[in-house]
Image (tube, rainbow, N blue to C red; front, side, top):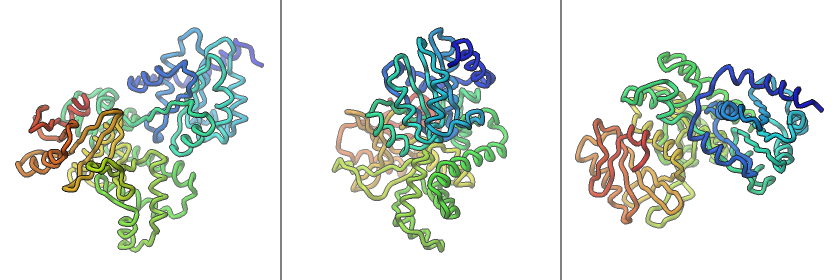
Length: 422
């Protein structure tokens, strides 16, 4: 066994690369993590690759490494230095070697799904006194099934998204104005864009290409042993182009047949679920507003980052700006802690039904409210809902100020992304 002195030297060596690049604190996630420390609960950060889970761990180290009582054990599976840890036995040995009795041990493991049988190692250390465990992963099905089965619910999951609009402003040192909002709607919030900057258009799209290829290769193609890669690419492109539209596996299959690709509905369902498992996109079910129930067929998809969606879809954003706004509103509703559904009315569709315990809100999203016809269409659908839950229209209408229109609140997009819903 190593002495405490030697262990601390090893730990100091581990932190060299962390200290060379100071992480920007994402306050929302830092507060969520700190609130669960010391509660004998494993903290699980989930989300798509490259959305910043690693830097949230590094920020945790920067915020806690000066604590006299802290011993931080950090395993970063995206670094070659930790490539030798491939099994839970190797993980257990590594943690045991660096574990210091009498200290408060923080065990941090990044991209844990790349370690075979990792759950056995985590279970063995969960019961240790003065120990907190924070892990990250990029596959929702694997994490949720393994954790719920083996840990009996003793974990708390935190979904990490790409940058919010206000984080985007902070990371790129931008003012809150229309030009910054346009950049956010175009390039999205992948944290790695901070290194590239948002003034080099070609480099931005190349970076987003590399992120997309990494997610597809590691979390879809290799994990599920996909062979029909051309169809996989065609399907994700179709979904990127059709955000905000109701689709079913059957309708997609029929479309693909018209493009000379005969693909079964089961394959489409499987591939779409793989995209969702990797957090590349979200499948959003329909909610019957009158009957207060969920429909099982026909749903919408929205992407976890609008920049990735724009890269996949290609083309200019001016032609599909309403889709882009709707996707960004969906992303932010998730950040605000809502469960989000597509509303189904007999007379039409409501963009979003947002639910929290004992609370429901209805939202329509529009590009511009610039005519009586548009106002009647967007506000009228909300007026058809005969209950007293709050109703909102969110739009990019210039100079719009928060105001009520027959009981429905009109909110500008920048106001919503900055301050949420009133």
